[in-house]
Amino acid sequence: MNRGLLLKSLYEVWVISALFAVALMIVEALLGYVLPTFAEQFSTIWTDLPFVKNIFRALLGVDIGDQFGPDVFASLAWVHPVVLAIIAAHATIFATRVPVGEIDRATIDVLLGLPVSRWGLYRAELAMFLTSGVLLIAMALVGNRIGALLLATPMPFQAKSTLIMIANLFCLYIAAGGLAWLVSSLSERRGKAIAIVFSILLASFLLSFLAEFWEPAKTISFLSILTYYQPLIVIRQEQWPLGDMAVLLSLGAVMWTAGGICFARRDICTV
Amino acid sequence: MSVIIIDKLTKRYGRRTGIDGVTLQVSAGEIFGFLGPNGAGKTTTIRLMLGLLRPNDGSVRIFGLDCWRSSRRVKREVGYLPGDLRLYARTTGNTMLRICGAIRGRDLGAPGRTLAELFALDLNVTVRRMSRGMRQKLGLILALAHRPQLLILDEPTASLDPLMQERLMELLRTLAAEGHTIFFSSHSLSEVERLCDRVAIVREGRLVADETLVSLRANARRQVTIRWHTDAAEPQPPPFLAIHRREDHLWEASLRSDVTSLLQWLHDRPVADLAVGHPDLDSLFRQYYLHGKPQP
Image (cartoon, rainbow over the protein chains, first blue to last red):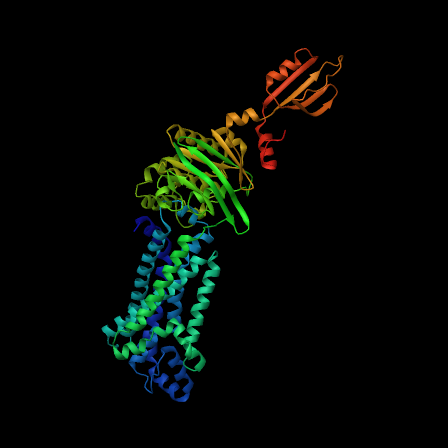
């Protein structure tokens, strides 16, 4: 892999990736601290407002039963819309830099005037994307543990289930990135590409949410990438969701490859 | 040996034609001027040479390699300055040199600094704080720092002041003398005239001329002014003089043949004064631009 391309990518993304990572860490720390702290109030709401239970069921993808236990708190911190939005936003912003961002601002002329292949550029971007993703999720984990340790009764660290859950989350990040790369490779304007990717991800989130209440949505819920990310089940069962992870990784890989093929074959017009 | 071989190259953008059947060759050590009005197809041709566009028909080869299929290998020995140069706003000149050097696998720091001195550019300034002229200088430094065998420059003097333009011209002449090939795209005749050995003119996507400057000058008309003695009758104009203005025994005309014919014709006629200008390349190029060929 070309060291210069990695260096160029690093210069461009380190600030934004660090900001996203810090934001995610803070959000996770808050969630890790706030959710268990107000457990009693949640139980009251649970009893008084039954529809809240449905909302949580929609967020977590499974029926959580009558008990709002530590497993639910732990998993809620990983499916909270803000957490998912930060991860999706990072994946989208990162993956729409190349090629569409470069085309939109016409810097690709200088970049592809250098002895690099389009696939080489695309692979270097993927390497930095995966590295950033690892950093992002690691910081989220750090934030989550900080929040948990600040509690009056610190929550114990469930190493295995946490590892499985963040691996599943990383697969979700890859799937979102794959989608963003495919759209990026087919677009001429970055703003439009970002809007398309966000629309698809939002539709995916809504579909997964609605599927818990509405039968027609349930029949097509397999189309939502969030269907393949269910932390509560992971925490309860402590088993690798291999099927879900395979679906997310395959989606990411297929869309990334399709994007690469489109990028390698397309005309680059910046004028 | 030909460094660039373009053969029946055609590029269409939907219904619009970018270039159509362009064929030309550029030899090693040549400074080749690629002229044409805006939108004529100069940049399209260059983008095809860089592998940024895929030809619909024909081919373009550099160093014997196909520019679409072997784009990366071709660009190892190419320095490219885009016409509409855009650089990464947050990077400095030094950072850009470091990145380009890492991509090319060589240290461009020292040659970059030498060029920066030549062009009077501070490499510590971020691109966003640079003026257009400064960015253009940085683009030139990035294109030149690895001393490529082939330089492809798309309107390189844009935004440069006259002093820097002259420095660039001198540098390009030196490089050409050392055997480097220069493909110089421009819509300005004067800079091409100052620099290039050979010129191709493209108009509406088609090549309308591909000649040496010596040959073009031979085809170009000279402007002639003749003042006749007032006490003699004016003769009838010969066919090789195209009269533009004729009043008070003064003729202003274009010479359609060589100067010898004019002098022979004037030999026994009552000439009071004669002025013969340089070959008027401006006018010739205008005709190529407007009509695709010189008018009779």
